[in-house]
Image (cartoon, rainbow, N blue to C red; front, side, top):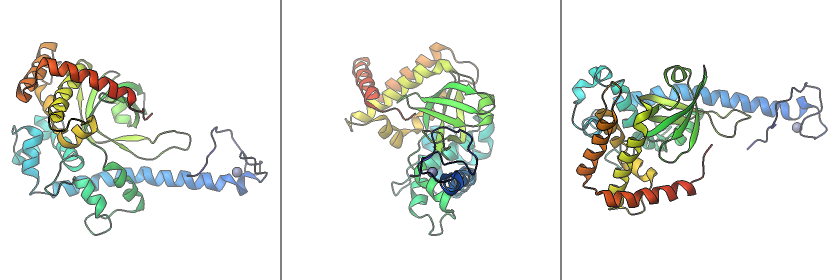
Length: 304
Ligand SMILES: [Zn+2]
C-alpha cells in the first residue's frame, strides 16, 4: 500500500517533498502519486468495460436461464418474454441479467461471476489485469436494498444499506438526477477505483436497479426479516449476507408486488402479511427475531 498525502496542498516540482525526506518533490513522492492516479484511472475504465462483458456472458447461458427466470419472476414471465420485460417491468431484462450474473447459483453451486473469476485468463472471458482485479471483488456483491441518504447534484448519491446500515458513495450522474433523498433502490453496487484522498472506494451501480418510493422502506425490511427468520429454521446463525447469497430473488418479489403508482400502506402491509403466510411464520417468533437483528447491527462495523 502506497502512502499518500493526507492534504492536497499545492506543491511545486522543486519544492521539498511533503513527507520530510529532504528530497525534492519531483524526486520523491510526485512519481509515486502520478502512478497511483494512473492506476486508479485504469480501474475506473475497467469498471466501464467489465460489466458489458459480464452481461454478454450471462446472455449466452441459455440452459440456465429458464430456472433462474422462474425464481426471479416467480413464474410470472417466461424467457421468451425477455425482450418485452423492459416495458412490462421497469428495465426488467437488465435487472434480471444483472441478478443472474451476480447472484444466481448455477448447478455447480457457483455464481457466474465466481465461475468467471476462477477461470479468468483461461478463455471463458477475456479480461485485462485491472478488470481481473475488479472481477475478484465483485464476486461478493449481491442484490440488496438501499435508501438514498443524500443526493450530490451532478455527481452521485450517498446510499445506506437498509439491512446492515453500511454507507456507500455511488458515483452516477444519471442516478443523481433520477433519485431523491429517502427513496429506496434495490440493486447491485460495485466497488471501483479509490481516489487518493478517499477512505473508501467509489462505488457504481451495476446494470439496472429497481427504484421505489421511500414509504416502502419499513415494509421492505420487515419482508426481508421474514425470509431471514425462515432461513434460520435450518441455519440458526444465518446473517443478512447468508440470506442474500441464497435468496436475494425474494427482494424482487417485493418489488413485483408494488404497483407503478404510489403504493398505499395497506397494500404494503398485505405484501408482508402474504409473505408471512407463505413462509408460515408467526408474529411472536418475528418479534424475537427483530431483537436479534438489532444486536447484530450494532456489532457490525460500518464500512464508510
Ligand atoms: Zn516524499
